[in-house]
Image (cartoon, rainbow, N blue to C red; front, side):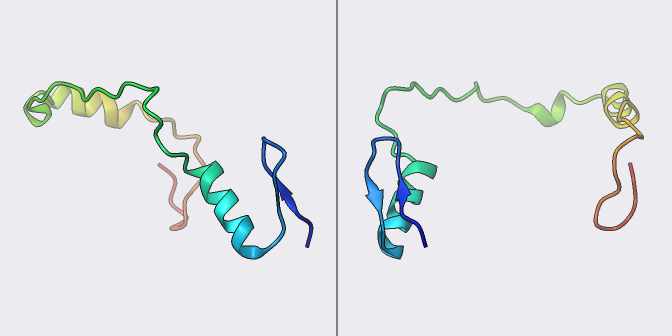
Length: 73
C-alpha cells in the first residue's frame, strides 16, 4: 500500500500513522481562531403555524429520487 502525504509534506507509512494522519486532517482540533456563538434561546415550537407547516410540506419537489423504501416524496 502506498504512503499517504499530508498538506505539510509529512508521509505516513504504517496503518497507525495513516490513521493518526486521517483523523488529524478530518477532525482538526479547534485552535481558537473561530468564534462560535450559539443562537439566542427561544421557543421555536411555538413559532410554527399551520400555514408555515403546509407550505414547507407541499413545496417539496416531487422530482426527487426514491429512497431505500422505493417511495418518492
